[in-house]
Length: 398
Image 1 (tube, helix red, strand yellow):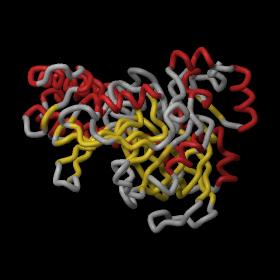
Image 2 (cartoon, helix red, strand yellow; image 1 turned 60 degrees about the horizontal axis):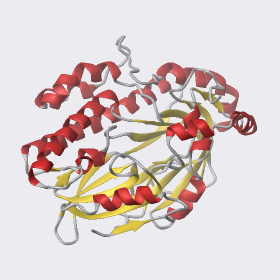
Image 3 (cartoon, rainbow, N blue to C red; image 1 turned 180 degrees about the vertical axis):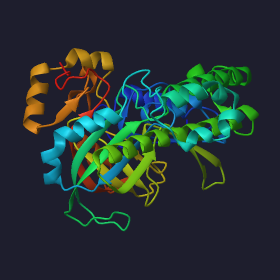
């Protein structure tokens, strides 16, 4: 088995089963190394919060089904005190320009973006089959843990790339979503293809841990399809932010974004062609800006990567779940949830039982485990408006 570096304690911060998933990935013949982020929890094949470097090979299952799921943050031209006065009306605007839920779309033609003119839609057979679906879902957010939040924050460390000074308070729009149904079907198609090819050549390899060589036509094609889904996911966020800006009349002062559920090429110190898979992990190369959200009721962070090579230049991508969705629904405490919302004065729209703050790890503990090691935090933000895919009631956590 190839080396694994862990950022957190197994049994306290990270379940043993999540470690065992990464251990299995690092036992593959194409494995180079792995890293487990402090938000890690059990996922499909590679754990969420798991990072795996393969030698000139890409695993569709390790990238994940929501290819290029990403975060975007826009700093808005409004003072926090003014924002608080207008919060309810801004929440309605945000709800109106987003589309959440499984199968959600803008099929009435309200969304348009240059990404749909990309020639790869016609060059890649599977992408061509899904182009109409992608066009309908363009600018939507989907379900699960995807969200659109309005937050107030404070700068904790000055940076050249941040147009604010230490101590400055600000308002920001944060969104989390990916490549929608199109990305899911592309991921499923190439995962099945990888399984067939790997099983022919290697015996005893679990189907979920299959890969494609980048020297093969299928591997090269998946790589291009993945890149297209990255651009498509980015376009979805761009549309949400631009439509909110237009609808609210608030100018975007600065914006940042990063994606996870993706693979990157990097030359290793020994000359290996490293393909770094970040399944729910944030790129944290030295100087790279990252957005690390908490839960619907806890803080989120703007951070700068420190380029930790042992961590495969990665960091956590959020707080990380404490249990399965099924268990989270069973554990949901209605009274505590309502009291929490009242105390924190958070305006919520569509937060389901399995997406409340009760379902997630302590984001401050997660940040403490990586502060000065994987990243340096630059700003801390707190949720004021949360829009998700649950029922359309402010108390739908019950």
